[in-house]
Every structure is written in structure tokens, then in C-alpha cells.
Length: 366
Image (cartoon, helix red, strand yellow):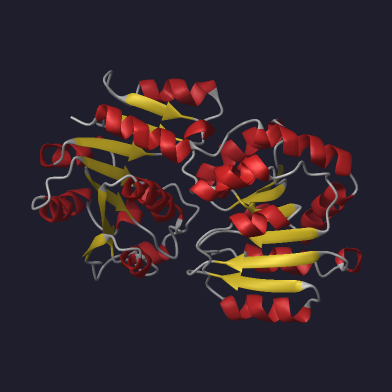
């Protein structure tokens, strides 16, 4: 098959949409299929990374009047994330697709809906949508939402898709790299004792949560902890993070890692944000303290907290240093609780979601 992905990354959007598409593309490529990407040339796009992995890439031009840079990444006005009218994006994407006639177009973009998908339908065999908002209609043959844990959300999609659309819902289908499933099988049970903490907020960190977590860990009661800090390509102030890391003993900084799996296996606790890393942590039974950095993360984070799977501190604009310190202290004092929660997390998923999604793509290929 030839599969084309339409997804964007930027300083404001983050890198998660492109990264989970790359995970799916890697598995498709491993099985002998060809993949290409169409992305807009926003500030912080991941075109270099995509090209370095050997995938064909078309970069759509960024408009001179693009006001994406003024957009709050926590805003619900996702239309601004496109950087222009959807009709223009559809025309440009159609021009890119026409020479290839792909079997599948995989769309992972909060600004695109059924109107855009219908405009592309005749140029491709079938369309698959990756979403986790359930806030707009789609015209597609497959829809993946790996974040669904609430039956009410599942029912919502039934009203937003046609009868012939197959819904792939829940963490069973989480798009994880293959090393997570392999490590999950061999990883011994966690005893809940915390000696090493990992910090990772995402490919970009517009609210500087990385620095806020690090400052909390400079308190004397946490000085015995080893800390691994990971920042992404689009972190707005890497020099600030580096200074904080250098000032704290037992702390190391990593940047641009292809996978977090190795560090997650070593860690006993993670401080981060919502998003795709929720499922990477769950697969490896790594308990986490989480803050939402986008409005679409709130519902799933609250659900995970209600199930005892994460410690949720709420939205970034209400986060206090005291709340972070209190959450860390609480986890440190309850190893038995941590161990039970770790076992519960690992029972939710086996880490083979990417394989299952590829299998569905093959089943549905026209």
C-alpha cells in the first residue's frame, strides 16, 4: 500500500500528532508498505525528522498572515492551527496527492473535519482519521481515538461518523513504538519505592512546566532523588532547563530522544503532561504526576485520575509549586499504593496497538 499522512507540528501545536503518525508509518514500513507525509511549514515543524527517517515529504507553505504564533496552545479554536482556510489546505493537499493516488490518507489534525475529508475523498482509496476530541463530524472509513475510556465518548462518535465507519476506540489501539510491548513483557513488577524521577512534558513546552517541576525537586526533602529530564525539539527555553539541571545534583538532561522507553523503564515516577505519553507510561506501569497543558487533555486526565491511574494536578494555569511538591511527597510515602497502581496500569493494555491498527488498515483496503 501507499499511505499518506496529513499532520502538523509546531511550537504551539506540539509534536504529538506527527510523532504518533510516525509510529504508525514505521510499522507500515516494517511490513513493506510505503509512506509519505504532507505537513505545513509552521515554526517548529518536524520536516527534518520525517525526512531523516526516509519518508517522502511535502511541506505546504506557511502563509505570511499566519497568526498561529499568537494562538494559545490551550485554546479550543483549533481552526487557527491550520494556518489558513481549510479550503486552501484541501486544494494544496489535493495537488500533493494527485500524482501518488494513495491507498490511504491518514488525517491527524484538530482543524480538519468532514468538509475537508470529502474534498480529498476522490483522490485516495480510503481515509482514516486519528482524533481525540469527538467534537466534529468526519467522513472516513476508519476512526481511531486511543484515549477513549468513557462509554459516553464512544457513543458521541456514532453521531459524528457514517454507518460504514469502523471505530477503533481505547488504549488497546494506542500507537506505541514496538519496544514498549517488548519491554512490558520482560519488566519485573514495580515495588513502588521511588528513587528515580523522570520529567517529560512533550515535544514543546509553552508553559515551561519542565522548569516548574525541576524547581519543585530542588527542595531539600527531594535531594536524594535521581532525576532524568527530557526536552523536545520545540522547547522554548532549553538554556533555562540546562541551568536548572546543572544546579541540581543527581540530575541529567536529554534532548531529542527517538524513544522514551529506556528512561521510563529506569524511572519510578514521572512528572509530565497529558497526551500520548499517558499510554507509554501505562504500558510500562510507570505512575505519574500529570498536569494538563491543553483543554482536550482535561477529560481523559480526570478519568485516569478517577481510576487511580495518575495523580492529576489540574490545568497548568492553576498549578502551584506547593501542589507539585505535595504530590511528589505523597507518592514517596505510599510505595504499596504505587505498586498496586502500577499493576493496574499494565493490565489496561499490551502495547501492541500499532499492530492492531495496521491490521485494520489491511482488512479495510479497497
